[in-house]
Amino acid sequence: MDIKKKNKFRWNKVYSKTDKSDLINKIANFDSFLDEATIADISWSGMYWGDLRHQLKGKKVLELGCGDGLNACIMERLGATVIANDVSDESGKLIQELKNKTACKNIEFLSDDFLNLHFAENDFDYVVGKSFLHHLTEEMESDFFKKILKILKPAGEARFFEPAVNSKVFDYLRYLIPVKGRPSILQKKAFKKWKELDVHPNRNNSSRHYSTFGKRFFNEVIIIPLGCLEKFHRILFTKNFQFNRKLRKLALKSENFLPHFLRSYFARSQTIIYREPKNK
Ligand SMILES: C[S@@+](CC[C@H](N)C(=O)[O-])C[C@H]1O[C@@H](n2cnc3c(N)ncnc32)[C@H](O)[C@@H]1O
Image: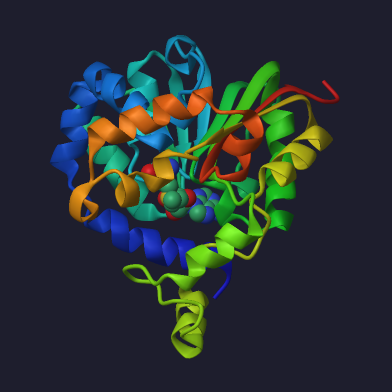
């Protein structure tokens, strides 16, 4: 199965079971949801890094890999016109239901492959994705960005929140420890079987890759490493590996005071910001 089909299969299953009332509640209270999420949850903190929250009003945004639609709807509530795209049809059904049951209307879901879709040139202020790029092979990533470059306005920005793999040693150690749904790399047969259905292609997810890659297409590239302390919060900070929001907030805040090389080496995630598309 190719990577796109694997993603479609996996995420259709996930989104068909998504708790819609939780999403509806978050959209209805999007301001208080964002207040909390952007300081406690690494993906929201990364996606809204800087002052994105206050920059979306009146802007046209394309979200790739929009998933359950929550971020697309929140951007719409913040004043943007949103086009949302995902390989999963269940994602489209969720967004339709969110449109029906919330005040979020100024949003359109496009289900086809992004590369097959037609968009006007210089049309978008932002192209964003939350945990999306690492689902593309590097070849797909190049094709996506050739197109993103065309559809972004000259002052447009591409912004992605992605995992960061900046240490081969840590990455190997991570795969040694089995987690729910994924065996250890030492359990060779089981690991091979798991890998056949894995929705992540073998690719480079280092900050260096995203920086070098981005410079092919954009004049300004900013990579913000995230999670060097936050990633330890379950093990170091909590009893019985319990999830602890208070300490997670503290970890996310504190890591800003560490030197960049430490934040980068130990990062678990990163925000990737590309500005000033080339050849405009
Ligand atoms: C990890 S999920 C993230 C979903 C959402 N952005 C979020 O933060 O919850 C990755 C999403 O990318 C989508 N995806 C994967 N490959 C894709 C592709 N080639 N085109 C469009 N969407 C894709 C998946 O269906 C899935 O919804």
